[in-house]
Length: 251
Image (cartoon, rainbow, N blue to C red; front, side, top):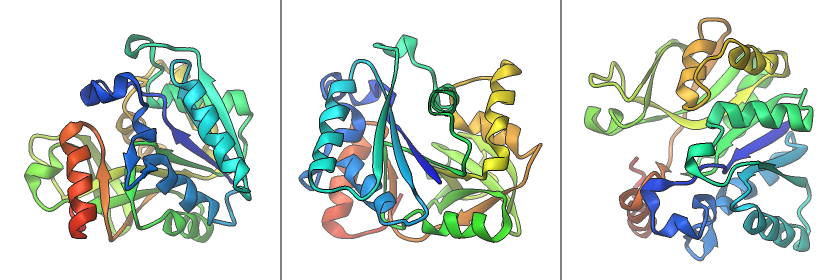
């Protein structure tokens, strides 16, 4: 299994911090945010390789980060791929970045995808166990505390554990189940990213791909308990510091 961490965005809503530091390397409790994801992946024996995807503007910072992980004896191979972009206007978008990585790295195994601006403490193992059990794609979900909170995210509908609906930032959310930006696709479905791009669909928000995918293949929703926060702006970055201080697992 390969794990792909997406760190290619420019985080305009986190400026001025993100003008100099990529969002995934912002400090959280004295460590880069990315450490939370990488350390979890390193603990999973099924993950054979970790691939970090970033842009040309921040490539050197991620090279330094990876060198540091290797110096302390990382048990897994960590690779870096660099998208040839230097500004928000040039970015590939989430699905474009995944498609680029699949082709550049010739990925043909099960693929775990994690957005690099996620902070979570429930781990990716439940998704791995789900795909091992039934062979369908799996998406980590988190229950919002209110419908107002749900309006800011991709909202998922389930029938049993199967995903049957997806809406990006709906005005009237049908459920409180949020897509967390953590996905696992079996190797049999990797070619669907190529199909999606070849059909000239929107290469940006991952929710577009999820909505397209569930019309063509099965995907399980894994509702996770614990703490999850998407660091989208300065307010949510501040909120993360507060939550780590109080221990309250709120989105």
